Length: 159
Image (cartoon, rainbow, N blue to C red; front, side, top):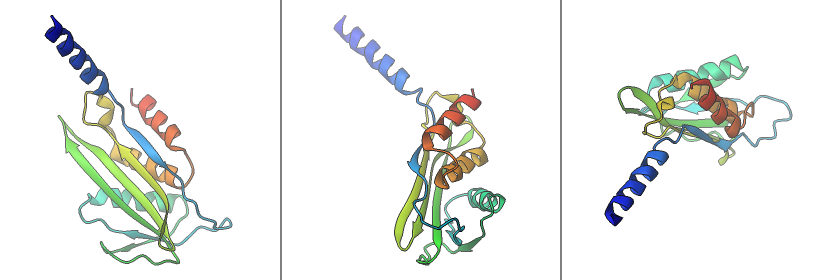
């Protein structure tokens, strides 16, 4: 009887933890630009799908920022805001963005970071539009939303 109780308890804990929803963590940029939009360089991550980079560039353009690309592993220009990113997709009945990170650097210091994680579990909310998820990351990084607000948005709009 004790073995059955332990097995049921383990199964219940496993099931409950498997329903964790996708979420964002991180904080917006901490730059003092006096209302000016910084020059932005994006370090291309050749191991991430090019759609991730295209989404970042489109978000920047749509929000009035100018950006240029620099090759993977390039040195940062300390006078410009440098963005580095990476995205990982997984397969679980369908392809989904499982983890992503965007970091911002200025004067060789990290001045902002956003992380997105969609656990590979029973929560179907992990299957979503990656462009939407990346746009929320940029909204967080540039202070349009908090990580909590973005997490709430993706977990209520997709249900």
